[in-house]
Length: 316
Ligand SMILES: Nc1ncnc2c1ncn2[C@@H]1O[C@H](COP(=O)(O)OP(=O)(O)O)[C@@H](O)[C@H]1O
Ligand SMILES: [Mg+2]
Image (tube, helix red, strand yellow):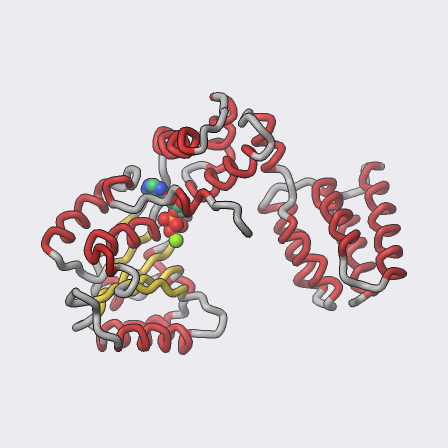
């Protein structure tokens, strides 16, 4: 993001003491840090509740200044497959820990692995048990095979409550000297629930409009993400119609955007598309035509799918 500081990183607690709630996990980990040893662990819970944050703070607590050399974060859902994931783990595990007896491998989204891949992972965990501890993070522990679960201390992290979220947001509000009213903060909680990543991003985006009020928060939340729309357009231009249609459904249904929000963003993006000028003019005309149809009360998904077919026929 250029030189803009991302608040989800800037305000991520560095120490276990600054982690909000999740006491049942934090207290146990602090005892283990004191002893200088930890078991393999499984962190299960929804997004944005502190799984990665806690693993990072644990590493800082155990290793101090050497934490980066002794800690590796890998995403299990790497699309290049389990062998790439295992290769990365192996390369890291082979190097000697620095000023410590073991290193930590943090494996995010472990529940995206198939049961077969998890069996392979289990063997990796075993063969490096002398020099590595594994922390697996997942949304649902039920999707992790039993032989892995039984080798881990399993921790369930809960979605954060209203007071927790407000405590966290107030750290950022005072750190950034923001102006925010109570309704604005309530709106953030209403939209993001106990997901602190989502609430922080919403706070940062709405602060760009000035004072944080429920109006500015809802305005920002209803905006289509340019990146999502760009992806959808590129899918259609690249001939991947089904993917583009799925993306559209996701924007309309899961993200709750209106057809108007989406088409407005499409309009902006078509102006900057990297295509021949005559094609661009044709698309601008089509977007305008469908914007009009939507205003006349046309069904959102039908109209937008029809508009996407025009992108498909244009190609890049
Ligand atoms: N319990 C928590 N205490 C303090 N900050 C948190 C907590 N949970 C999440 N956050 C904040 O939310 C963002 C995402 O947290 P992260 O730990 O990456 O979530 P996940 O559970 O998805 O791994 C970070 O900016 C982090 O500072
Ligand atoms: Mg995470």
